[in-house]
Amino acid sequence: MVGAGSVIPWGPAVPPRWCGRRADGPRRNGERTMRAVGIERFGGTPQLMQLPVPEPGSGRLQVAIETAAVNPLDRAIASGSLAGLGEYRFPLALGMDGAGTVIAVGDGVTRFRVGDRVFGQFWSRPLQFGTFAEVSVVQETPAFGALAAVPDELPSREAAALPTSGMTALGAIDHARVPEGGTVFVIGATGGVGTFVVQAAAARGIRVIATAPARLAEQVRGLGATEIVVPGAQPFGQALRGPAPEGVDAVLDLVGDRSLIGGVAGAVRDGGALISTAFGLDEQFLADERIRTMNYRLDRKPARLTELTGLVTAGTIRPVIGTDLPLEEAPRALAGGVGATGLRGKTVLHVR
Ligand SMILES: NC(=O)c1ccc[n+]([C@@H]2O[C@H](COP(=O)([O-])OP(=O)(O)OC[C@H]3O[C@@H](n4cnc5c(N)ncnc54)[C@H](OP(=O)(O)O)[C@@H]3O)[C@@H](O)[C@H]2O)c1
Picture 1 (cartoon, helix red, strand yellow):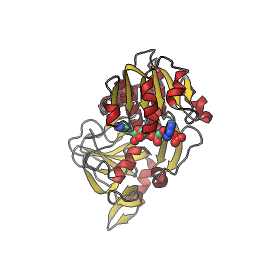
Picture 2 (tube, helix red, strand yellow):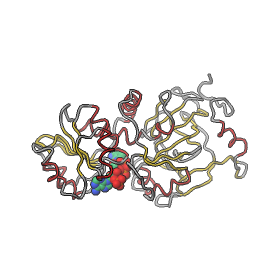
Picture 3 (cartoon, protein in one colour):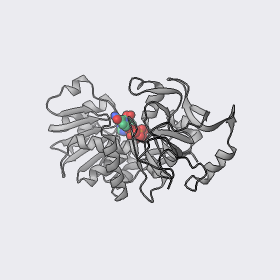
Picture 4 (cartoon, protein in one colour):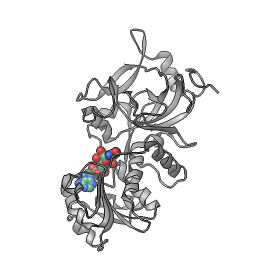
């Protein structure tokens, strides 16, 4: 086995198609280049680019990306709204979540070796070489993200769909502190985070009431929800009076629409929790002393990725992938131009 500080570009662990690209791939001024979807500056429109293949510096891995997944976070990075959080270099290949094979390691790397399959949220410092690219370079312990070995047998397509949404779901549930047998109401259950929340909460013995359009109700029930509230039929607070006349232990908001949240805060029992991953709680909600309120930002990522990996390996939860696209379609996915016929779940990008 090859250890830290080494490169085996032609070794058997390197995907054969990648070997082909390394041999014949386009060159710019003698430099090897790759396909990536990125931006030249904050606020720029994400587009397909030909960028130099990044080399791994000290403490970093060079990863041949097989599959990446799209998150609202990618849009936020591209817009510049998170410019104050982290450190960025341009041109910047977008993409936080991905899965692939380590093809080279920099000096001092100890956690991974060439040939390892890895997945995670590749949020390194500085951020420049994201997962919407044929090759990413990531810190072996990402400054703002988390990286782990892909469990045996887990396809890259599924591994890539897990990190940001799955970790966020677990974190939001933890902070909600709903006891086994308690009830949670999930607003936005059909999306990336929501499909994990429903499964993970149900697996903890929590009764899940979830929003979903009528046509998707059976699928959300299949994830573990016991009752479905159809948005638009009636205000959520009113809709909850039937299934939860005593109120719910927690509301998890994954949409961020204040008019929706306002209607359901009153349905939370005294001492219960109202948590928004979409930063939908304003000062008024946050000042509420009757219940615990929080705009939740993903925390404890390495520990949450470990927990998530365990749940997937045990077959307790699985990623719901609504759409598969080639890398070239990333700009359209980021622009919100991709629909799903069934559950929205995750949109994954096939890079190779
Ligand atoms: N704070 C953090 O650390 C963190 C981490 C991850 C995500 N987030 C945030 O969490 C939120 C959810 O993320 P995500 O990845 O799950 O996004 P997503 O995949 O786009 O899912 C959002 C879901 O909300 C549904 N929805 C939209 N409007 C609705 C409404 N009025 N009523 C009921 N459902 C509605 C959508 O349904 P349709 O499919 O029908 O449109 C979609 O399924 C986003 O705001 C994201 O930025 C925050």
